Image (cartoon, rainbow, N blue to C red):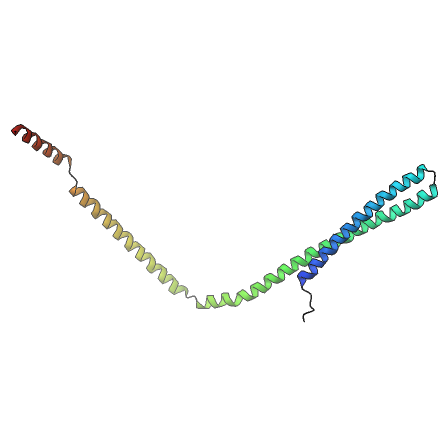
Length: 167
């Protein structure tokens, strides 16, 4: 039971193999370039048979490089598909856990009661709004009554003039 390798472990190992193949491809490319230099030197030295052998090795290294890249690409595609499948399986597992919870909530939910409660709440808000408007109107009316009007101000000013004249 403890020996079972998880999907994440497989994906990780395949990614490592992909990187390893890419490095092998780069190494083959470097060897190919070195062999091309050896072919040029052999031709310049007049050693045609040796140049032919280097050229054959160079072709093998080039094919090796291409094969490593192809295999690396195929592994990369496989990794992408495995990751997608793993995400999908994880999602299905999560949804499987959620379905009973959603069904339980749905069974416990009484839509008619919720609708009635919302209606009651709206009525309460309307009553509060009406009460607030009445209070505001009352406050404005009382402050208008207690505030001196222009006539009052004129009368006060006239009285103060008379008092000054009497003195």
